[in-house]
Image (tube, rainbow, N blue to C red; front, side, top):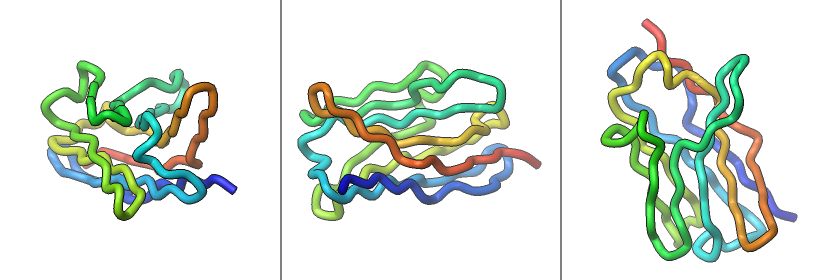
Length: 115
């Protein structure tokens, strides 16, 4: 059974940092294209960052220079380091793993940026 479990969310003040982790079981993430998405209340889910199986990364414009996606193959986890957080980063963050036509999602972790 495949599971993606996100962790690391929480409440942080503007300008602060958080590190999200996505722990995978049942798949080897090094073979998958991994993505971090977020969904704010009343808004559509949007792509935040991607990390391909080949190691390529891509970020949505609003997080470039602030967020970094990385992978630890030994731990079978993908992380999202988020710095200089802004209130508009508040959302539920989801991890996604894609291999050809197969996609798995995690359950999400809440990130709230507020003073």
